[in-house]
Image 1 (cartoon, rainbow over the protein chains, first blue to last red):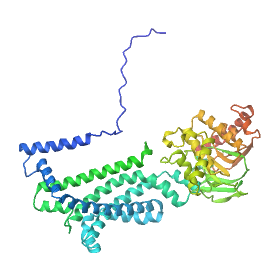
Image 2: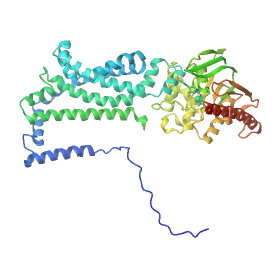
Image 3: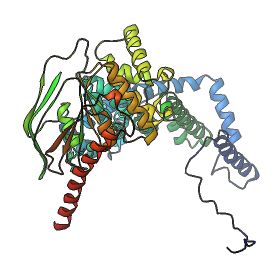
Image 4: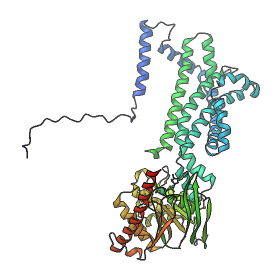
Length: 268
Length: 255
Ligand SMILES: Nc1ncnc2c1ncn2[C@@H]1O[C@H](COP(=O)(O)OP(=O)(O)OP(=O)(O)O)[C@@H](O)[C@H]1O
Ligand SMILES: [Mg+2]
């Protein structure tokens, strides 16, 4: 036996951690506040010229006017109802078609190429066609938004159905569950995480298309408001409109996060 | 209820998986199926449960399922196959709902099977909160809930550690002793086979044929961990399987 020698040990270097985002509640808000503060400081000090960017405080003031004049809701309510009807149509048809593609060979063979062909078409380009089909009124606006949300929903849904654990479906069959029960109680809940993350994309697209739809033959609506401000180069009002759209985006994303937390709590 | 395998043969593409398998599974007995990996045990079980159809031969059932049986042929899967979004009791009610059993009747059945599988306190837990052994007990409880005529178990204990496996084997023996059921039990583990099987069917390497059927007469309740006569059976089974495994290895070399 050798005498135990005095040795100097080196600590094992740490290389784990990361790859697991945790909620950091106020950081998102802090990023917004910093950016807006920077813009305010820049425009006030003249570092950013007034033609490049409106002053955030002016935008806020314009927003205040819009609110007190009562025009805010006159623009917002029609937009919200178009968004709700169009997206509800597109998403519900998209989820149903996506599940059918996920479950039936002929549906898959027939519809996957079709969806791939429709997906890259900028739906805005089809607006004149929708006007001819559904009229200049609300119909064409619903159709545009529905069509635009339909394709990403289909793709997300059938991908999610493909990822449902087949052993769970075999289990359902082995207990003699009906086809409809298997779809409702196994396939759909199993695909829900994928469907919801597809929904984030679909709804963002719905907001983009909302503006496009309202640029044609709409008296009221956020899109009409932005279009009018844009044609007058009224940057403050343009930005008010843009900020409203961003807020809509943040709110829908927040609502989906809420739904996920309620419906997907089983994922730990 | 009795089930007969009548000359079952099957191939996936060019590989013949099973050849001329005939055997009768007696009512209220546990038949264990052992064999080298890939010899078609799981495939045979899927035929028995009607999840797949063999190329040739038939699976026949004789006699009526017992009174109150909701799903005569019921599987217990190796990977549990629990719905992660349903609680323990929700997973069990899943298989009752389609038979129109809801409310108080469902609750009574769920309580009974959870008690029998010692899960009484976990009715509201989600699968992710359970250990592997408890998940498999939930799967067994779910199978018991439909009052099966024949239980089809595909390596139900292989995903578990050896202590949990011993405990669950005791539980299965208890369940069977209190109320004998018919079961086909596929396993890799010879200790499980001699502990639970009234008969042990040894399959050859692929294409799987019946190499030998070993009958063990000792009553289940009297079998114990490390029994002499069980060990003799186990040794015999091991010799049969080792020969098959060796031959399979030799074939690989000559390919
Ligand atoms: N759906 C399938 N399509 C094609 N080949 C399959 C299919 N299912 C099983 N096989 C093949 O059939 C053979 C037998 O498979 P099976 O799963 O029945 O074997 P096993 O005895 O259960 O094996 P293990 O002991 O590893 O579970 C294997 O070679 C496997 O690759
Ligand atoms: Mg297997």
